[in-house]
Length: 438
Ligand code: G6P
Image 1 (cartoon, protein in one colour):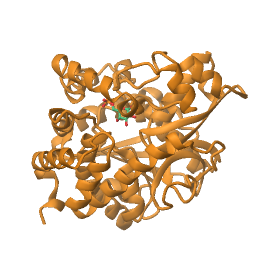
Image 2 (cartoon, rainbow, N blue to C red):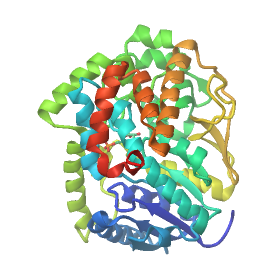
Image 3 (tube, protein in one colour):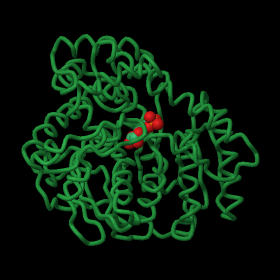
Image 4 (spheres, rainbow, N blue to C red):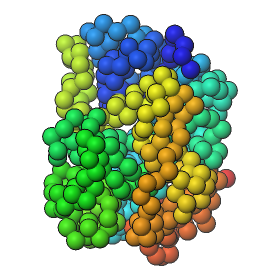
């Protein structure tokens, strides 16, 4: 796709995360000459967009990079003729996230942004908006790649793969976060670490770890037992049990704690709700501080405080992916793509998070070198079935699919609990769920 003038559109460009992305574009400008960066947002995000946009311009100017940064409330104008469209939206803003976290908790369930009943509600709100964005891309930039960061990233990407009709790859910062943790443990540069991951977004297992050419998969499990730091900023850092890890035979991801340590995580949730409030409320405070910093005309780089957010370093992921597509690099990255037989125990047409070779044609998943053992396969199949039902519920406003989705979810688990939490979530999100009101 080598062209001289690359255009990138960021939908949800007023996000406090945007300086991450801008830093990435600046650092990789030689390989990925983004001449035009359009940050688009909705009216409610106008002020944030202006503040972030001005910081982005100062960053580019200080770095001496000729990137034209435009701000707009017109999504279609942003998308028109773009080469890459990146989506990082939050339908209903942080208030909706706070409800996603609080309502399940009221029912005695895990209340989390992407996992369980909270992530389910976020999917119902988000999928229709993403499919609208796909409609715009089909019309205005049919050759563009849609790089989706919007959570729940696996479900949203699956909806795009099934109903969007655009070229897409789903992304998350968790895989790079895991590589960084391994690199930190061995005191090596992240480039020296190769990991094989398999599963779905926020439920993937690291089945192989190679450091400096040496397979340390088993040794790392021994190191990981009880260790701190193997998590993301937004997930309590509970250590893994040694025997559990050995018998699992792979490194779980940070989000697996909600499944494998549900009672401890519920306890943490109660504690945090009593002291700090929901994660959304914590994030609101962090964001307010960040925006105060961003306003400072003397600030011309990404502030370190941004690393308090769970999505830190996502620019690495976005920029690496765009660079590899643009330069036909054929390197390996962990991405969300169509399964098509890579995980044989899942349907072909679902979205999985696996390692893939990235070239100008997109992502080509690699065969797994370590098949998923039954203990991983079983949980994966159930949660994937929940995701398939959630996509149907979100696209068609299908109450029955929604009820079945939550009933089989391991963090909900009974028909009565599913119905109760579903009805509360639908009522609280009424304004964002036109598909359920037909
Ligand atoms: C993790 C996840 C992201 C998520 C983020 C939330 O890193 O991988 O998908 O968006 O955390 O972080 P926050 O600071 O908003 O709680």
